Length: 427
Image (cartoon, rainbow, N blue to C red; front, side, top):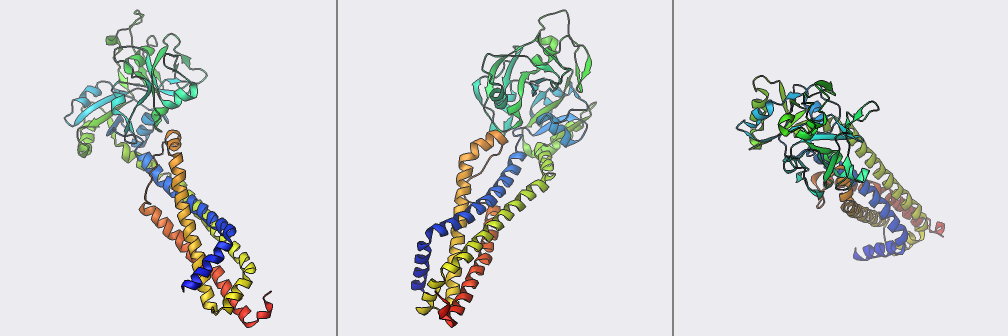
């Protein structure tokens, strides 16, 4: 057995260029399938953790998905706001550790402006990581018109610390007016997180209210703004207490009591509120996208099947050139069954090497791309030993190799049998 195996290995080595191309073809097909599966799994995990450190998002009575989309991702707009009076009531609940307001509605060159408090930078997390400053610092609570930019805003608009920014009253449409009389000074730039905060322009609640000084009481993108003391050109912080918020971000003392806290918030007297569990709402959104991820997986398997068929085709064509070699093996005493076994073993070994190469290529590719994937798409890629799902994919691919390897082996069996009966046909 060892002699025949050694002959098979020497035969493969003599055709190392063609064999290498076969292994590489199968390896890259395998890498594609594993990459699709890995990104599919990591994308689900990353999307579920797009908002970390926040246990509840409180908004007006309505759908959980709608509140999550407009408060975190700025997709859509609120149909109503919540009274600012509910913030101290939420903060006073025994189960609540902290609560931060969120005001939305203005924009800066297409990027949303978030009005919040300075402690936002210690509380809000993305993918389980706290926000960090690439440059500068957070805005000061007692100083108006300071701004912090997300990484994508600063990179796209090439801003530096100390720049002056003028935000727009609204989403930046042609008829929206700019707050030219209230420019902001850039004091901080956040590191990239891959989350929605990368596209945010963050200001204090007081600065957000001061922006609308002189606009009076009115409706604007679902926000009720004002009134303010129009006679004072430099408003004091005491004059800038908000009347309404878009949403409130809540952190609990114990996450195990999240359902009790949600019930307590939604039952606050005189308030019509909805408390959203971010993780649950994000999972609901992801399930609606399951067709897309399943389609990607099917495409990956189709590519892998194409790669295997290409390998089979190459090996079948190579059998014509190896016909003399098979005849020599017959002359040395190998039976057609033994030749079938040897070529089947050779094909299986090549297929196994292709799968191993595919896994290594996939891991190497993700290792070099993980930083780019996190910053550009918010994907937190996990490396290391294959997960149970990846092992299942490898098992299915190896099963395909076992089936595909039988085709050239059976063809070699038929050729060796025919050549054994008619040796004059071998040239």
